[in-house]
Amino acid sequence: MNREERVRAVLAGQEPDRIPVSVWMHLSQYDQDPRSLAEAMVEFNETYDYDFIKMMPFGAYTTPDWGTKLAIFCDKYKEVEIVAPAITCVEDYKNIQPLAATHGTWGKTLQCAQWVNRLAKPNTPYLQTIFSPATTLKKLAGARMIQDMLEHPEVVHQALEAITETTINFIKANIEAGVSGFFFATQCGTYDLMTDVMFAEFCKPYDLRVINAYKDETWFNVIHIHGLNVMFDTLCNYPCNVVNWHDRQTNPTMKEAREKCSKVFLGGLREGPAIVGTSLQYDSIMSSCSDPALIKKHIQEAIDMVDGKGLLIGPGCVADPRSPAENLHAVRAAVER
Image 1 (cartoon, rainbow, N blue to C red):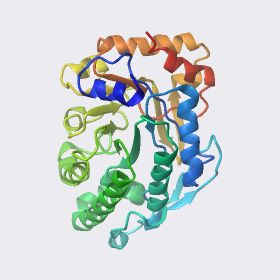
Image 2: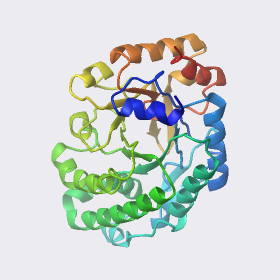
Image 3: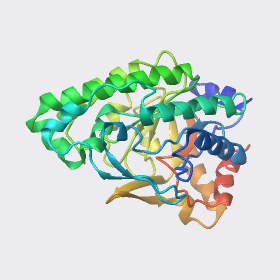
């Protein structure tokens, strides 16, 4: 099987020749230039012979066009940081207006997808990373978002409408660019941030509008549930065919999740950064383990949880860029038959 055939087989509930696998990480030394980032992602994927590319635009790419201030380092080990939010008062929500897919940093991220389409090896699926509207708003407003949802819901909904429209514009352009699907990430689906009631009002309706814009147009669509104490039962039912979460760091385990969800799981690697202050701190087996054999054992544990069925191996979130080459090779070697 080639890479696409292998992934499609898993998504169709069939048995592949081996379990598909991929690893992705921030490539912060390249992620301010679309072509350079595309070249780096493709080279990384070929170096380790992974089965698909999960695109890695910097995590705040949806925010600077609305006024978020960033610190950009172009350093392999130092990701872009948000240093000042775009929204500092209630009136600022009204500044969030719809944007075209080609506008500013959205447009640069679209160009990256276009470059991957040109550069990727034939039959290599690739996914564009998008964020839920509320996740983007959280990055724009910072800590005040939850209180504003409670006290000023009208202006919050207005901003979410604009972000949703912009995200859908971006989605349509990426479909034209040839993406295989989308990696839809929500950082709001956790009880550590909000209740089910708040999520139902401020997140789910906008999430579903975004996902419905592509679910019938692309074939490889992942829902990423970021964080701990997550709303798994709600989010695993989103209309995506693959579910990814911090499965080695929070409940449910893959074994527990399989009892309630029949979709394909993507994960198995304990890779889950948390934002501490303005920077990422990694909980990473890939960078902390000095024995590649233990990486293979770690992956086999995940495979055993679901009897090797309906599974793609990858990070629970994003791998530490300090991960050594021998461990990155071990991930691929772990699925060989």
